[in-house]
Image (tube, rainbow, N blue to C red):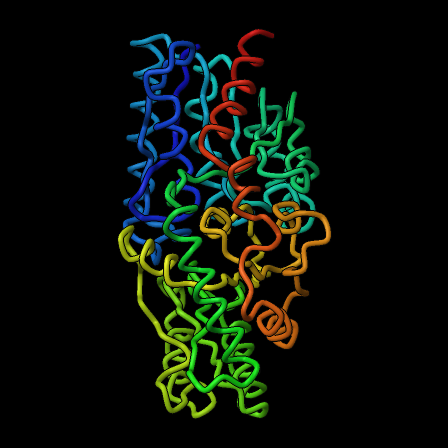
Length: 392
């Protein structure tokens, strides 16, 4: 099988580009699938994503010509791409790519890393946009989705087959049992003692690592941290909760609002700030933050939320996680997982934080990562889906 991957890798770094890199790394030197890659990067940075410009249009034509050349030069017969979410400019980009490239390739494979294009066709697209989309994007040979929740959305474009392949991450802490877990247990013991009236102060550190954006639950997490610390102070507890925020801001107005909130009295105590901003976290910084964290929060209600890689990484680190009952997110956790909350519910987040104080990974999230979300598990499922297509 000869597969052309028409998708970009970091930079800019986000879940989609990260997963394309995982795909390429996993299929590198594969004996059954020969991979050709067109790094179709259009955005220089996160701030540039989803915008339209003449520069991007020229790049699209350039990338498409390269894909067609690879088809003719090497006989590549399968075209793999990551479709846009339900954003008009991004869907128009996909139209151009499919119009130019699809006639040259035997079969088209869509690997959805964001949701919403099917719903947009029904509720947001104009009649002529629906017609064009179904002509150019409809009936792919295979649609790969991140969870069962997204089958209905992908089905709107009438694929011949739909398979579920969850996102993955390389194991960031193979020494978890000998290094990270003992440190987590030691901190949990100190926090448990501080919570019930110990004299020594102890800080419960909660990590938010994602795009800094209201719909990702950032401000709900801040409100929850203010709430839980107020409760602990009322109880004269020596425990405190600190939120570590890592990521880039999408909107300048929200960054200004965030900065203004950091100075408020409810987010500072005698030991220092209760919310600490670390900016964009490169790989070493990210590992440091995960190693210091006692819990992870991503209370998202983002319209195009798919399968956040940061949640997979938090599982790999054995952290108790607070996430919302939003789209695919409950699928990632064990049945009845106690860390799920409603969207836009800071009080519920505070309740879960209070419940997690002095505890470690009692739900077995680290084990769940090892069973379902490693790159090896991802690779096995991707190969099976692609080779099944080849064998039809």
